[in-house]
Length: 263
Image 1 (cartoon, rainbow, N blue to C red):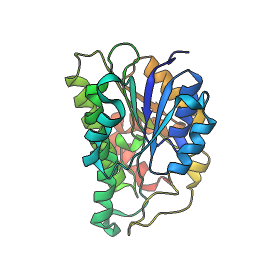
Image 2 (cartoon, helix red, strand yellow; image 1 turned 90 degrees about the vertical axis):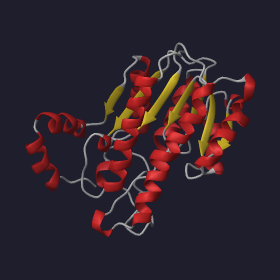
Image 3 (cartoon, one colour; image 1 turned 45 degrees about the horizontal axis):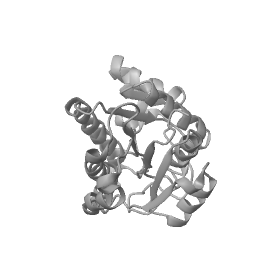
Image 4 (spheres, rainbow, N blue to C red; image 1 turned 180 degrees about the vertical axis):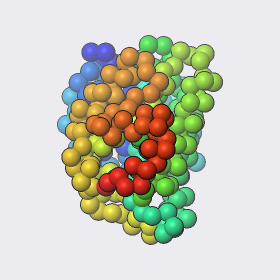
């Protein structure tokens, strides 16, 4: 029960990795704040969590970042401290960059970067500090390299990587742990909601995602990485090797990625 009585706030908790993390942390005895846009889905996740009466739901849209400072004050106030924030909510993309509307680029950056940054900064003053206290941010392998059809998505994940690296370097006084997770192909509905060039949703699952790691396995690996105090962790199958391929053999990587099946 490593997280017994710890207060954990999870965004994107209505499905996928966020939902799986909710179940795993609830089993560990954590008290959860579950956030996403879909209230009804959050109610289902809460009901399915161990000790469901210990958890609360806070509807949250990362596009509404101007509200987060007040939201944190309303939820946590002067008498409550948060042990762990898990930035998991996000939106993906499946479109060629020359065909993609600038509005789509802006929307993806607003959710994946600005929304995540705004919530993190709103929450930081309330983090308790000490053992198992900090922030887990779910990025993506394309936060380390890029592929076709994900120009805006990759840019947003590169940006959040840089922000979290800076945060880790600057905030040391409260003994906080900042872990950035880079998942590969995880079997979630992320690709259903991925934005096409005109901003509509793809509404189908990629083959690579369909054959990817189960979310509950991913969730356990995320928690394990955090407990080990890791700054970063790559989670997935053989696609994780691309990080090292790009680092040590960039020309070979560039040739391979042009032909790689990324959907």
